[in-house]
View 1 (cartoon, rainbow, N blue to C red):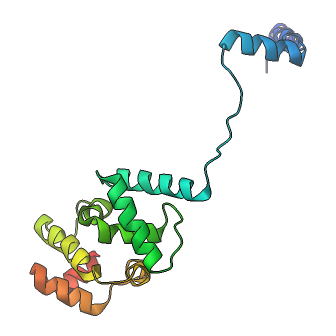
View 2 (view 1 turned 180 degrees about the vertical axis):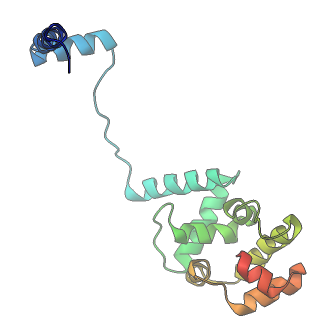
View 3 (view 1 turned 30 degrees about the vertical axis):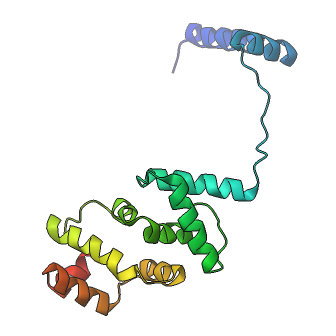
Length: 173
């Protein structure tokens, strides 16, 4: 395949690479640290589990466009505590509780459009989701959003409200 001269060149290059890699590990580590000038100390996260959960909740809310993080976080925490649900941080319970504390978060969470529906119908449908779940407990709302198919009464309610056929709406969501 390759001529003897080319093969000999490959062997020579491989030998040089092998010899170049034979320096001691201490020399390599010290030269790398000195060259980069970066402190390699590890920081330990000393936050409590609750503090981590609240930070995760804040990030989730920020991602959904919530501007008053402290008041909204307090609302979410109070809602979860009132239903004896433990704060996990960025779980489904927190998300559903957030929908009851910040109406705009639901529309930020759902896709901005649905190709199967005209834009005004999708906007109406998103509003309908919010109205439908506003009196639900967190557990009920989790079950609603986790269902493979939305309940027929929700489909009928939304179809009438949004002036779309129940069949078109059901197939779109």
